[in-house]
Length: 568
Image (cartoon, rainbow, N blue to C red; front, side, top):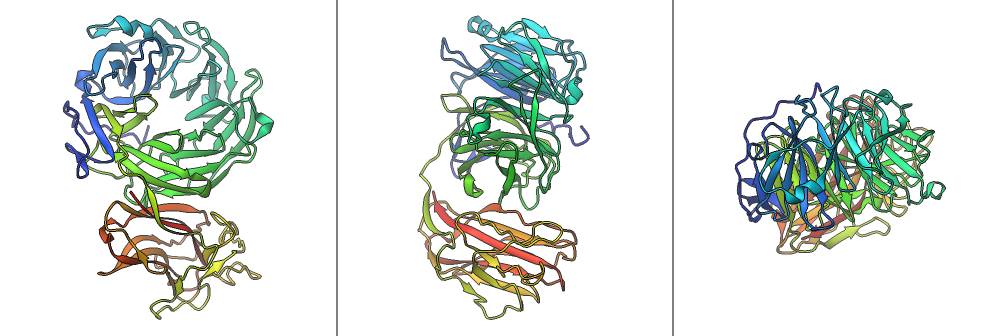
């Protein structure tokens, strides 16, 4: 609550369908996403926007959005996304306002909770009532579950018929389980309370690689500072399988499983958004020992990320002031993600803050994607992927491809020079040089040996540089440099130390990325990044990677793996 900011009152105007051309759809920055329509808040009941969910009527094929607002839930027919129709509003149970409202759908019924209303409970609304609505109206709920008062969010397992309410005034703020198999008669099914407050969660019938739990019902809970995995197959006796923290935690917010239940992406709402928005990558193939394997760092935005969902090989992320971001996750097993599209409903800023896109709903079969804007209302868009992504050049460092150490002859480092090879692990108040690579057995690393002490082969004495062979870029298209990297250092480092990536082109050398050191411990953790090289189309370029110990005797290690340049 302390981090919530009052919305900037600049409500969007109702806009007609507008293609994304030259980086804009009307006034909205975009890439490969077209605008279908905007319904301002004043057109759907007023107030401020928050979360939402969708419903597809299996009888008629029509698509609907249930849109959360501070004073109620709006129902919108989005079957024709260029001409959505507002059908009416279901007010809060007692008419009170809540900045947080959450909706989920099961068996043609919407379940609606509110966080800031202690007596709200969970409203139940029969969505088939919308079939006959021709003019906007004020609705009443069909039923109300009173087993809890307030709730932060709801999740649903449609395979089993259970709603999982979290952040309630029950179960120590943990998971409050509700049986909704008889949709209008919800029944309390039990609590998961041993790990305290849960902010959001996802519960599934598990069919992943950990065969011990095949067909068990498993909840992945985002518990403020951990990913906590619980077996809720027996609602009367849930079993906590693991509770795992991670480096860089701010406020563990929300996440989503891949379709094979082997990996997971997670948003942390108050982690540092410098140098870019972070998406945490997890290997959850062992439910008793999940591992945060890497972090994707956006090279273009520093927005606070909020909710994300995975469909196939794409992740759809609501990043507040940066709007909808679509990530290609085909490389998730090697900690490699890349942004392929976006639609920014808050053009004023892409930085940290709580304005703009609260949630996205990408599950409609039509391809319509809904964005809920705190100030903007309901924004409907569609991903228009354009040209396919192809690989221009890549290097996994499993063989020598012609990288040159100290290419300018001006490096000053005396130890820890860049080399290709199988790295040895070192530790000093945590992992420093990682003994694991992103793929294969080799990477590009500063002094790959371990020695008898962690500092025996780290970077010492100044700068070490390594430059790729010459790479001929195509003459057109969106060109992206993608790679995995890490910088690790001890608390004796300073901002004079750095890890840096640059591109050498016909006009000189341009820095793409810089991660400075700090007078605090930083452990090694693989991170992915992506940078636009389109300005150098048609040129031959080289990638320059540098690491520098310029603060004296600081312990410093760095590495790079899986470098690719792609074209779309």
